[in-house]
Image (cartoon, helix red, strand yellow):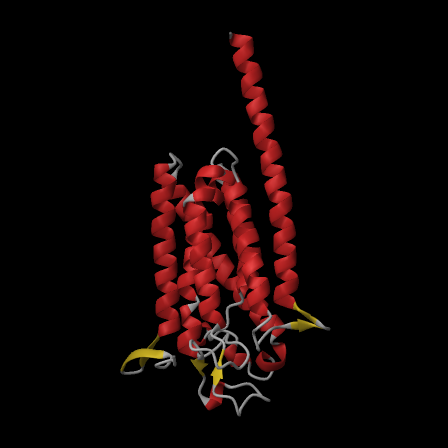
Length: 271
């Protein structure tokens, strides 16, 4: 397996890259699915999508800032590259921090059900990640250690990191993450979606936790990890994501049980 190149096509001075196409596709598919789900759930679909659009923009900005901060040794030397997002370089954990926070703030401001809105956005978000990861394939980035496995990924010499120039084939960690994200998406819209329906907010926290588990293990193979001392930043963020998910699931379960208890008490009072 090898990348056909980063450029999809060129019209005069206009260069269209696969990374941009796939990011746009991920956003369009995600918004469509979110709108469809919100309508099915009887929620204000148009308002939720409006919040989603702003949250996506904020998430993209957060992902880029995260990438630039942890790669400042490169961007400090080439500041013109800071805004060259079409060349790649979006760190998912930055988007997961900023995007939902902006979404929650706007939902509160516009009086949209926050927890149910988060549940609506969880499957579209992970599906968008599954699609967007293929941009790494075309850019020849986000790959892992050298390997000889049958599904090995060929990396051209100019994209091989220092110390690995003699190797030709590497783990396609972008593919591992895309497949994991797709599996999480299927789980969210099937079994977990039905099981957690009475627990508003739980589906979103399940998404955070499941994504974080997969990312933790996949990150151990990658060659482009950000490091803080002996620790990979993405793995630390994944551990935090799992902790947030566990706390969130416990909180939403307690909240749902209290609501159910209150409903039973009200029914007994009316009986």
